[in-house]
Image (cartoon, rainbow, N blue to C red):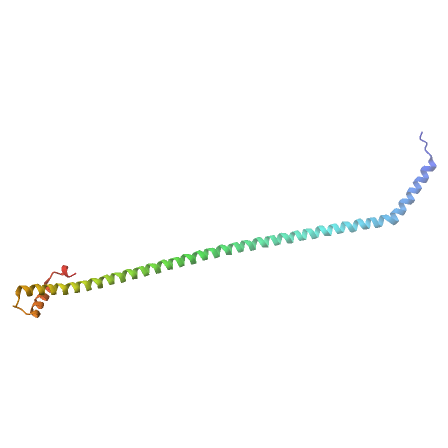
Length: 164
């Protein structure tokens, strides 16, 4: 079975103490130093990551503000473009109306001129016809100038509605 040997236990404890003292003197300090270095390196990396995260969030906020400003500017440009287009359309409509009114007035003037010309021509023809008719009726009683004067006097005596 199991025999406990007190000498062996004593030497095991002494060997364990010597190994422990040597390890603590030689290996424990470098291991603890490496662990502390690694811990400070991790802390430093975490702080840098946090700082970079804060900077990234600030940049994102800046970009959002810039995008909002750009969108507002684009909306303002669209609004201004619409105003300019409306103004140009209104000016074009006004110009077209003005030109139409001028053309209409010119057409009325031309019609009035043609009417006056036609009435003058008609009066001349009526006078010539009247003189010819009167000449045949009277034959030799009046000369041509007197007949024309009689016809002109008749035309002047005509009602205004027939003249226009």
